[in-house]
Length: 138
Image (cartoon, rainbow, N blue to C red; front, side):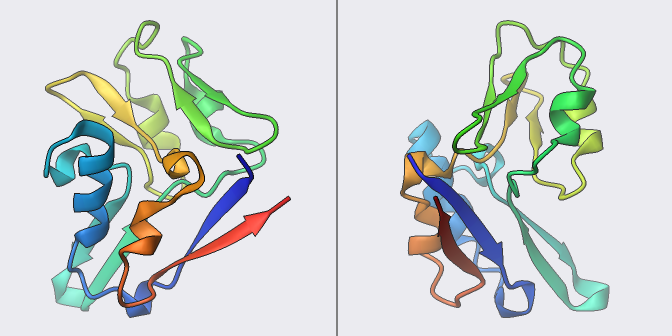
């Protein structure tokens, strides 16, 4: 898999949440935005709707914050992986992500972080407004 970056153009986001729906369907088989690896936040008082997705940091704060080593980064693709077996549930990774791109599920007690759908990036394919755009790096 190549290094697939998802560029975000927040001013184009309509808040339709289609990206969250296709993401949750792909990863959990359910139409449940709470299980999506992309997060849409809204601040209606500021007229702000904004997608948040892992930005493949060179030195990820989320990984540095994880005391159990539950998060790792692929050296080639920069994609973040989560190992639920070692997770303590401290949620330090959620707190430390500067992009607001990691979600904690209280029910399943696990972290959701974007894996780029193994190179397909379905959220980008279904984003009709162009708020999510694909950029591939070698």
